[in-house]
Length: 494
Image 1: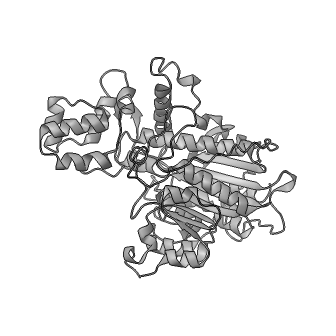
Image 2 (image 1 turned 90 degrees about the vertical axis):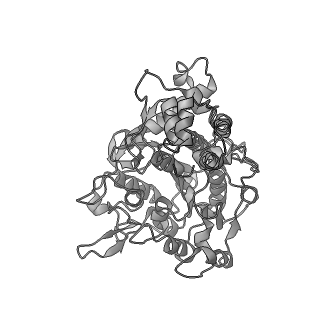
Image 3 (image 1 turned 180 degrees about the horizontal axis):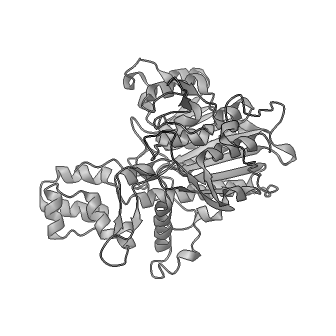
């Protein structure tokens, strides 16, 4: 009955997700007048074969990148595992919370922040592998960061004809070398595939201790916010006893581990590691939990932008923000994915607010690395999805399963499910759950009436969005490598 661990609850009103306990929400609305227009993404449609090696990047060190309108900022938001159905599940839960009596007829009237983008399209995600059509996060993040298709597991590199791993320059590294401030923010492990593919180079995503070492010793990243500090501390490292936190501090990094410390952080470089050995908790387990010290993704993203904005000066910044646990919920076929998606929606709204109010030109691209789980809204039986059940959840399986396993009676199991999941179990469900034959997620999925076709990734195109005067490039179907090319052009002032 084991299920993958689970995360925080975003509220149903527009842009009002809670950032979790002990966190004072920052705001980008600073009373300033809106800047002149959004930056052009500047994609010119070059062929992938020409476009994205270190030698091919058109880096103009003398160009300040901002022009007369101030700094140039590029923000890439990645919803890991975020397919069309995941987005829509969050959309409809937000509408249900806004006004359950008028739902679903009110769905079109509720602001879903991803819709605020200027361009709506999709991206292809396949890897460079003759035997595999479905990509993992390493291959897709490498495509988005370097402009090169690669094999599953590759972190910012490809294999040459001799089978040797060849690193490829990333857009973050180009931005850093051009004088931009750069940052990575994720709810996954800091060393997980998506952030790693923007600031490290290893043949396998499993080499997380090497990734941590490269972050601290080689990457020059100004802001690193995520989970799993164990990879940075001697007791958590199997390959050596390096104390990378101590090294980072000696290199001038401010080190924080809690939401309250994050809120008081006022300068970069900064290293924030908010969980011990794995990802941050699911949003349902972070929000309104007095025992949690973990921040919300919104707080991490806003703090990162404030620090990068100050550090980037007239040049500007590049920032990757990843909602990493959409993927993990989908791998588990667990409906908490809806709550992860609401947190993502809130953060997307904050990023777009910043773009509208910033003093420079800010481009925002929202996409996913791949879809996970093959989610469908509606599964068998009546033509219905029960959002009241989805909205009644107060915790994830990471919280509930251990409690059920320790329960000593049927009555205790029933009480746990009622209190934590808002579900009154039928006798047959209680029998199955007590016998460990039916996972909690399966009972909830059947009640809610959502379905899944996989516990892995799928190969469907992922929704892709952009904001900016030339964002119409993303109105069609593009390849995920084109995202890197668009970012490079923007960093070069095109």
